[in-house]
Every structure is written in structure tokens, then in C-alpha cells.
Length: 338
Image 1 (spheres, rainbow, N blue to C red):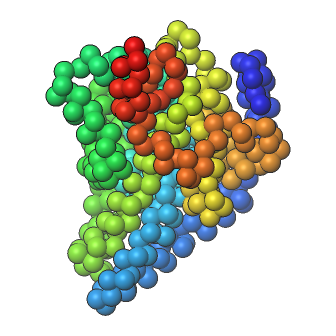
Image 2 (cartoon, rainbow, N blue to C red; image 1 turned 120 degrees about the vertical axis):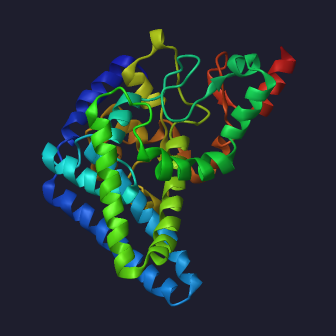
């Protein structure tokens, strides 16, 4: 177990040897993800067009493969999937059309929220806003209701991801004054997406295209938000105020090791080894398992299983005194005790 800041820094230096990507392995990983995705997409289209609605069940493995493509795009954004920046950027941009995520715009956001979440204390760094118990109590009733709705599973993992990937990513929201690059990335992705939809509509028809790609996209978006959520919103996470925050401590203690079954680890491209990723974001996804194999002491840090992750959903408030995430029910109990 890594116990001190000094050990965390030493470990970060040690992990540097895993940073070098293997070009052949990267091409292989991309191929075994993209080819099955397009095969399933085409097979789903053929089945659904013939009136067999059971073909929609293929949206689940299709979404899993789209999630894996997104994780490859994520690695490209960190410059870790290929050795050269040009390869990383253009593969990332191409995948961004399929994932509805403008690559350069999203990469800038990703770098702004990495490493890890920090309580500021009124706003957490990241896409998921989390209030402290005292902040929530100080809000008027109507804002408390809105916050509860915001964190409701139907909104967080259903409506929210659909809005994020289909609508919000169409404009560089939050970066209107950040220069031309976010606009170029977003508009370039939108144009490429429009061309793709036009071509596919001409080949197979607009509604069949939508009937196939929309469920895959919606499912993949929900899975992606769920992964981000449980990798940061778990009970024993470590958040701190700006003046006490440390990169290395936050990387290891502020994100989870989401220990998934082997099949799900493959579909999510080892993103569950999130604490190691944040400690050294330049490690390619296919080498994260090597890190745990060579350094088994890291496997126990922040470890949560698939079953345990379901208990993370109610954890909506940060308890500053207990230094842990708690539910509204737990907050009410604590308030009565005090």
C-alpha cells in the first residue's frame, strides 16, 4: 500500500517506464475494436430493416464497442495511444465523429479537469458538481430540489448523457472566449457528422440509420457517464481544499480502481484502473493491466467491485468532517445527531 506523498511521487516516477506505446499493439487494439463495431452496426441495420426488432438487442454490444472507441479517443487526447502527436490527433478526431465528441474541444476540457476532483469548496472540478453538506443546507428549498433532481439516476445516467453527447457537444459551451480551436474542433466535427448522416441516409435511409445509431449512442453515453461517476463518486474518495491538495495523493486516493469482470474490462479498455491512469496519464490503456500485475499493491487502493459500485449512486454530498461522500439520508441523520 502506498502510504505517503513521497511514496506516491516515487511510484509516479516508477510508472514512467510503462508510458511508451507500441505502434503495432495500438493498431491491433484499434482494429479489433473498430471492425467489430462496424460489423455489428451493419448486422443490426440488416435485421432491423427487415422488421425484426430483436436486432435492437445488438445495440448493447455495439454500445460497448463504441465505449471502447471512446476510451481509445481518450488515450489519444492524452497523447498515449500512438507515439506521434499527428497519429493521436487524427485518430482521435475520426473517432470523435462516431462518439459525437469534438476531439480538440473535449481534450482541452479533459486536461482542465485532470488530475482528479478538488473541492473548491463551492464547486467541484469536473463534469459532476457535488456540494458539501453545509453548502446544500444553505441553499433555498427550490435549489435543493433541483440538486436532488440533478443527481437522480434517471437524469444523471439517462437524460444527462443524451443531452451531453447529442446536444451540448454541438457547441463549445464554456469555451466561447478560448480562441478559435474549440470552435474549429466543434464545427469540424459537426460538419463531418452531417456529411456522415447525409451519406448514410442516401445509402440506407435516414430513419433506418437513426434507428440503429441512436440507441447505440444513447447506451454508450450512459455507460460512459456511469464510468466517470463511479470512478470519482465513491465513499472513500479523497477530496481536499485547494490549499491542501496534492496531485500525487489526489491521483491515487481521489479516484477508484473499478474492478470489473474480464469482459467488461476489455470493453472499457481498462479505464477502471483509474487511479493509475491519473497518476500517469501517458500510460496506454493496454498497459494498465501490466502495472497492476507488476505492482499488485496498487490493486487494493480505492478498489470497488461492480456490486459495490451500485452503492455509489446515493452518495451525493461531501461530508467535510468525516471526509467522505454521504447520501441525503446519512446527512439528515448526522444533522439530527448534531
